[in-house]
Image (cartoon, rainbow, N blue to C red; front, side, top):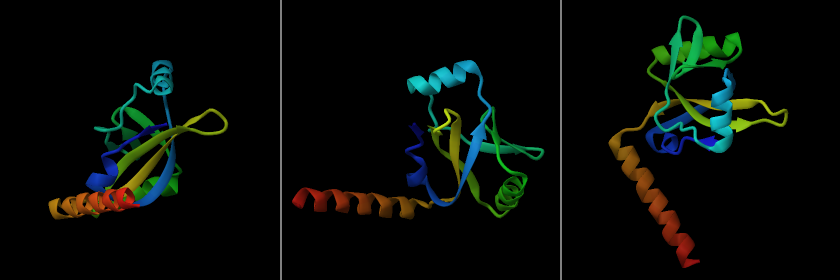
Length: 122
């Protein structure tokens, strides 16, 4: 499982979608070895198809239309996690999110530090 750790810090994650990924052999090998990174990954539309960097993401037509309409409203599509399902197929969790402002990020840091302190005290 490969996780985008910066996503929760930089974005408010709203709607979750599970998408298939079109991968080649070397991509699958890199994911299994843990040498694949999602930190700088982004999703874009080319015509009516969704791509993460250069990998095509497979979603249902209704989901693609909904995501495309949301992009116009100022939301972002964030690749969050790549995992292998029970059938051995790689899937990706994609979230619809809105970027956080600087003061929101500071609030997240304060909340995280407060939780660490309270866990230490217990």
